[in-house]
Image (cartoon, one colour):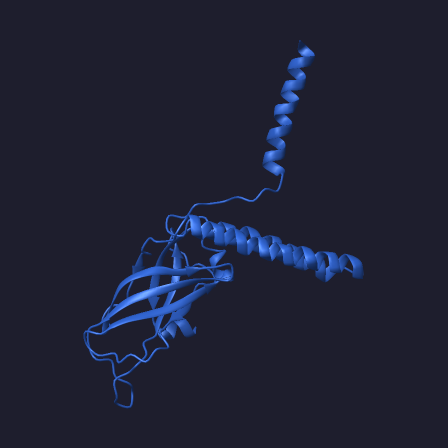
Length: 207
């Protein structure tokens, strides 16, 4: 009986130990971006590790095998993100904070499209006053500079970017405008604790 209890206890300890040290990837469910950042982070970490193994490999046969594994891992990542987004549409409006005293109003910010390479963001904007160029005519392009913050108000690394629209739309009072931008996977992998988008000045963007 004592031996049975000892064996049972040992099995339980072993299971706990393996679960805590087994190298399994953690997954967090963000309120707005779901599990996408975690999926991106986990696969990117695996790909980074595989890339390092390739760089350090000195055997041609092993290097070929590692390259094949890397290629398969990229496909697995594309499939995993595609399947997740199809089953869990990222259809919540993203919280945002606009700059004051602009000639336009950002009505909402949404995820336009998500893939294994980037997270495309759309700004829906109303033009309140004619926006003219420095040399006179009404402008046909608006640039929205922005970055992302986490729940503690900290800047999320690699998230500073700019949104615009390459279609020629006159920016006159009353016009509706959509600006687009993409966070590359270097940014998306850092967004497990994404909380909101902050519009910034061009000067801050250029820093």
